[in-house]
Length: 305
Length: 330
Image (cartoon, rainbow over all chains, first blue to last red; front, top):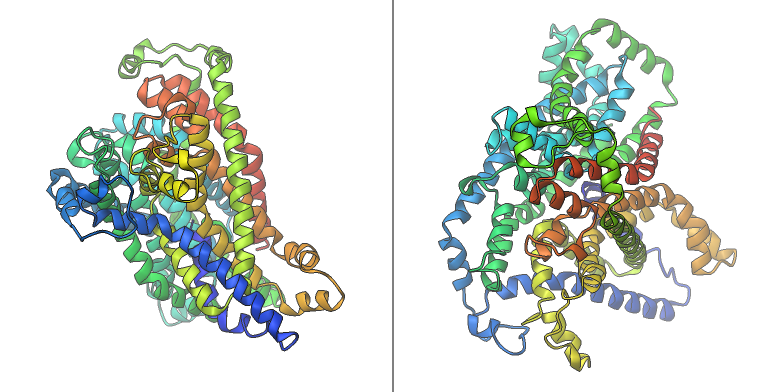
């Protein structure tokens, strides 16, 4: 997931440079026609990709009359927001959003703290067991969550953390920590060691140097990794579905899955789509807001390195 | 997943450090001498947490697979557990359904990986040739697609392909498929899985692949491509012999990651079938969930988990080796 996200953000910077070189004078007419053809292909591709999202949003503002019509219409006869009020009238909806927020914030913060410390160790020190640790982190990242869902359930049950926020937060560390260690490592490697040393010459302890030099300088990295970890935790479904049971603790994804298969709303696609849009909205907003900031943080880090 | 990007960035950094090894090396050694115990203190919390939430559960899966914990009662009263050796394995492996599920998962994975890598490569190439406005349009759309959670994707696709009021039926009808009105895409699991679920998974995977592969392609020096053209290569040849070798490491990573993700697909199927997929939709992930949580056959489910990891092992090892190779020059 996260990979191309970063690389993608790098592309707009390269756009201007990449474009003009093509069709450099040679057979200008033909290359312009070709560019027109490729543009058409790209736009059609973009429209096809955008269609499910368009349809989701469109469904939320259609009236029941439109939704039950013989032939679906590609534009509503009139805008009707009653689907949203149906969702907001569901007593569990806002509660589930709050649950997701609690779990997400908890796991992101815990993951950042624990992951930052480990990333400093991996980036700054050579020690016995460093390479095995890195490989272990990589392996952990690849173990399917489904395969440890049952034992996690057993472990948390034994620890009294089943159906508790804390249990899910701890379980989510299984993917936040490896991710944070792996990504922050490259940010920290880019911070010159001389800065640590200068601080220590000026009377800082080594621990002081971690917190006064490395921590502030890796802030862009912390933001980037925090955003990705946030998205993963917010969207996570399998563990949330297995480790929480009571109605009032469900996360928004679990809520959506129950809502859209309930007898009352199973065929009510207007409110299902409204719910689907609302539970993904925080992530969409995060993508939009942080796209630029995180990109500038990344490039800044790269240049300084 | 996260691995690639940091690896690629760091690959550059480490290589930069390469030419000036003596000062760097001595500095590193100085650091090491000063803080002999410090790195261990720093990684301790991470190790403790990962032992608790990953290592112990994995050990537990292995133990469970040799036990007969196949009902909730046995789980609740551990005294009833018995060690049954490989009986659990032979029971699961002699079940014809298990092999059907495995075969279905492989077919599905091969289909989805081939489709998503093929389309990803094709549109990454297209993006290299379009005007800036078209590229910005496509990239923006892809970013939004990327932001949609898997469960939401499944829910939306269930509505798109709905038998009553579904827009895909209507579009097929508009394009001349008169019999397509009120067509139920899910009635036949083969069609539902290999068309609808596959479309859903490919749609969700394309943003990462197109944007990632396109970014990898922008690293190909234009001069090389132009030189190959001057030498008389056609577009396919210059792609095959110039572009492909350069993006190859990233392409391999993408392919193995796609395999790993698609083989364990669960959430989309779950949402598409409204939380109760019919047996015809069971891939390995769904099967082990059904066994473990729906029927409380915890030991059988653990056997399936182990089988799933073993089936993915070749690709997993290849992936990790590739990541270590790209980034591990440090």
